[in-house]
Image 1 (spheres, rainbow, N blue to C red):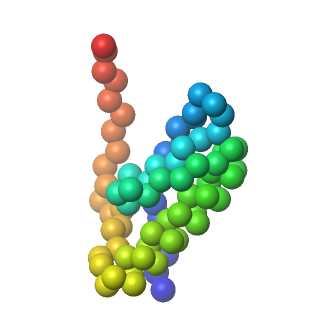
Image 2: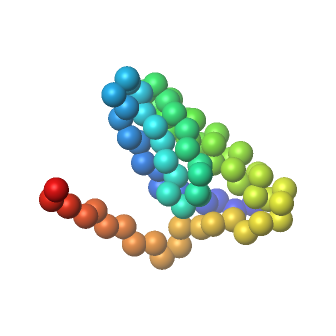
Image 3: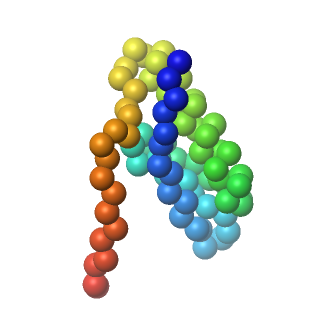
Length: 75
């Protein structure tokens, strides 16, 4: 078994809670009412996502040599 690390993004929602996105795993999205719950939900969602990839014998994406930038756009 291999230890993998994935970046997660927590987006606050107007009605409360957080939508969690996993940029390296397309379509891996979850929700939590608190930051702590959101992180736990993300861990579960990532595990299930990777299990599904393994069951299909598909490649598991890794965040190796990833660059991260924040862009500020004026509108």
